[in-house]
Image (cartoon, rainbow, N blue to C red; front, side, top):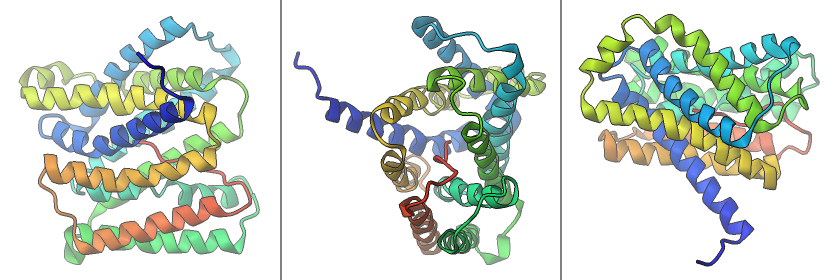
Length: 299
């Protein structure tokens, strides 16, 4: 069997990441048919934790230092427990396609964090990108259910994006302590431990959930929550971050395509227009010559 070239491996890994993270909003919507938002987040990451444990044993990751435990717990809180609980509650009232667009706004909030929390200088170009992106966010939220039905669900997804922004900011200001796989494993595990507050009642919901919902949740736990992160770590080991991040602008259209097939969603024209505005603003942030604070938005 011929060996794949390094370039082809990277392309396949990028394609896999986009497909996995594009599936995530649809998987969440299916999971919410039988699970409460907190129970869905816990079950998803219990599955991911078991999978990551097998990978950790296979790869032999190092044990964390005691002094780093608060840092790792904070990563798990913002990247896993808070982010996904907010995301699940938000998607109770937002379509899968619109949700994927709102989640992609993470770099906009990272810019705000850089200025107001870490006191970094923010150029006029970046302020313009943030303003443009926030206009796009308003268009998406308004266009998803109509101006008369705007509620807190879209805000919850934006808060989930803010949570990811904090996660990436923490990573940026504590770089070099652990490799990508080790950091991902401990973030997933610590976040899952924090989600155990939702353990009461989980077994009853698992027993009552239909088979199609169970399969969707298993897919959420293995693909977007575990395998996609491993594939993304492989990509980042071979490609510059700013170049690799460009491929993630394919996640919202992929999510919309998957939702249209699996859920029968047809995004409104305002949602499409807003999505274009948001993605242009985020792309413009990444095209600036100065380094940006955020890495990418995850699902």
